[in-house]
Amino acid sequence: MIFSFFGFRKRRIKKSDISLDEILLDSSNLPAFNTGRMEGKLEQPIGKRNIVAVGLLFLIVVSVFGWKLFTLQIVNGAAFAERSKQNGLLDTLIVAERGVVRDRNGELLAWNEVDQTGEYNFPVRAYSDRQGLGQVIGYVSYPQKDTSGFYFREEYLGRTGIEESFDTLLAGKNGHQLVESTVHGEVISEHVIDVPQKGKDIELSLDAGLTEFMYQTISSSTKETGFRSGAGAIMDVQTGEILAMTSFPSYDPEILSDGDDVAAIAALNKDTRFPFLNKITGGVYIPGSIVKPFVAYAALAENVISPDKIIVSNGSISIPNPYNPSNPSIFNDWRAHGPMNMVKALAFSSDVYFYEIGGGFKDQPGLGILKIDEYMKLFGIGEKTGIPLFGEVSGTIPTPEWKRKTFDDDWRLGDTYFTSIGQYGFSVTPLQMLRAYAALANNGTLLQPQVIKDSSLVGTDLGLNQDDLAVVHQGIRETVIGEGGTVGVLRRNDVTIAAKSGTAELDSSDTYLNTWVAGYFPYEKPRYAFILFMEKGPYTNTVSAGRVMNKVFDWMTIHRPDYLLEEE
Image (cartoon, one colour):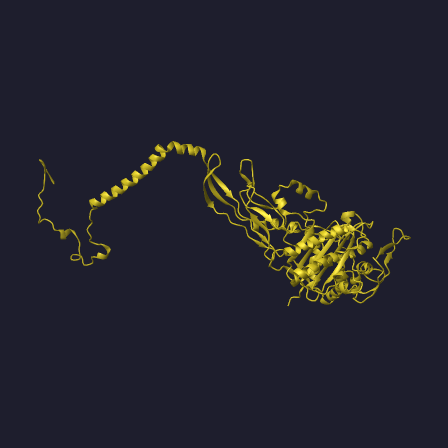
């Protein structure tokens, strides 16, 4: 079409005016033509059939969507509106399952069960029926809801023992789910949006059967002899693993976790024997003569006395009283032993011998209180052991500084004498003494006690003189096998034992006492150290802690004979 002065007119196109070859490139007129890259390909318009197909598909989708919208809003709109008023969508907590606790033999001690009462919608804790494990295992408090049904505490809370000390390991990670329910609480649908993760399982170093029997033996002995309470433990002298640990009286962890038996819980709280206390780690007691092997080693190491030097015990020693010269201070032995070298002094537990090497007497020099304090601490006595259980306490080794702070009084020679035999203000935990005896047994490595099986070894080489240590070993072996030794009750044919007994007076009126026994076995190649004490019994009692411990050895002979064997 072209313009003209007078209007428009069509231009006639001649067929010869233009050729298709002149407007399209091909391989004939362009040598570099690349057909692989689609050069020269003619664009074809979309076919009418394709357009119709796409249109039909779009129409179908719109129709389906429109119909669904119609049914939701018009047909069922009223019903769904009413349902939305009545139903609720709630983000609900899924409490993670707690890890289980087993003993060294795989026996379950703490695990999870479905709550049969319907009170809890999460697993509840169940505990072994074995006696004597309460303080060691501990208990838990459950997640708690307020009156509106919302959790103000979302996790289990470990309260004591293993449950508390290893809470972060036993506790899992809670999950969440969306719950749709009616106004009446009927659940319509549940959708987990965060899967809970179960806590880690724990395998203890404890032998539950051995621990239970030790507990039962202590329990029956207290009833027979009038002691108030007691405790005992056994430890591997090479690894520090605790094989048995128990305190009497104990408690049932399930009662405390459930919290329903109000009367039973009230009775436990009123019990003056402190059933919640782990006496092995958290109780401090006057040790008495079980400290004498460590005083003996100190005296040898400091060249205060030679092993063969004789000290004669006539039943007492007396020293001048500067405040009343006519009334000298007398320090009694528990009997007149006669001539004593160090081995015999340990075997017969001569107080006079240890008065003299501890504080000095006449021409016999003594260690002095500061050296006694130094060597007690060397063996970890009076200090925390580092056992991975909460609630451990230290204790007291009497010193001039301690007396000044406690009584605002000066230190006297008699104080050193009494400290040398484990009396006066001396207080220790049974675990400290157990660890110290383990250090004697393994020739000088002070171990950190462990309650988890196959824990990493943690210990300190004390650098002890082996010749001096051999004298101490001989002395506490003679305590068992020597004629008149104070722990002759532990002389056995099935296992060789080295041990030291102790009797601690609790007051000056000779009314009550504690009785101890500590040692290790087998003597030639020690594997285990042990401690057992009976608390606050009548002074006239004739049943020693050694006799109670001997029953434990009887049980091991039948049920755990492998513990009594020497390792090859």
